[in-house]
Structures are given as structure tokens and as C-alpha cells.
Amino acid sequence: MLTKNDLRDAILYDFKIAQALIAKLPDGAADYRPTAGQRSTLELAQYLCKVGQGCTHAGLDGNFDWFGSNSERYDALTLDQIPAALDEEMAEITRLFDGMSDDDFANKTVDMEAANMGKWSLQEWLLATTLKFTTAYKLQLFLYAKASGNTALDTWDAWMDTGGVPRPQPVETA
Image (cartoon, rainbow, N blue to C red):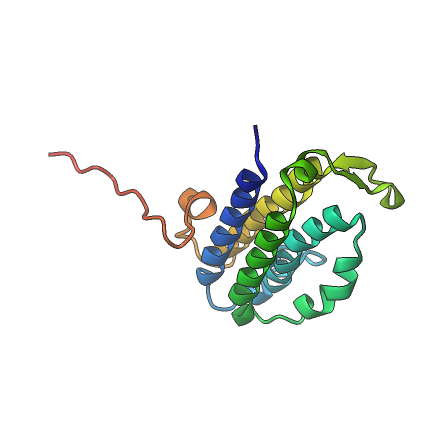
């Protein structure tokens, strides 16, 4: 059974990987965008700083008001400010998860019918939005980092490198 702490920790893990990826962006990567009309690396990083906590707030509040009240702040971040903003986001997600009861996590109904999104259990909402969006945008950041010049990145960087997990080394044969 998935617990709220399991889900919180999975979300936080992906944010730590995103932070490690930010540190691996090559010079000039902030302006990289795959095609016109897609977010730049900076815009993607700015969005990543709000989407996890915004979706968590939406599930708890039953609306998207948090995004409206906070978007300008995150949209003004520079690339140098992103790591600290991700730290703040992880702290806020931790605070929100710690404030919800296990019963609310499993059984609270999130009514998003006003946004044409139906009704969900809080657990379903957090899994389908906060975790999935965090994972998807982290992977997009990985791809942007590679496409903008850091071709040394590999699968380890996308899935395991939180900045503190040592990369496995090949076994030397005699």
C-alpha cells in the first residue's frame, strides 16, 4: 500500500534530481528551446518550481487559486535562483504532506468538477498530478540539458543522481 510518506518521498526525490540537473546545464542553456512555442530551459525550470506545490495546494484546496497568487514570483526567477526555489518547494511539499492525515490522504475527495476534471481521492490527485508532473518536467529538463550541450549526461543523471548518490563504476576485470 502506498503511504503518504512514500509518495512525498518519491516527489522529493525527483526534485533533488532536477536540482542536480540544473547544476549540469551548460552555459547558454537558459535560452535553449527545442522549437518556437515551447518553453525555454529557464521557463521550464521556473514552472518546475511551482507545479509540485501548486498541484498539492490544488488537491488540498479544491481549486487552482495558489497558482494565480504565486505565478508571477516564480516566473521572475533567474536560473541562479532556481536551486533555492526548488529547496523552498520541497519544504512546502513536506509541510503540506505532514499536515494531512493518513485518512485524508486516502479518502478525502478532491472536487475539480468546476475545472472539468472530475472528482478524485486526494491520493489519486497527488499521484496523477504532483508526482507525474514532477517526473515529466524533470525528464524534460534532462532532455533540454542534453540538447543544449551537455552530451555527457546519461540515464543515471535522469533517474538516480540526486547530487549525493555515487555513480556506479564499471567492474575492472583482470
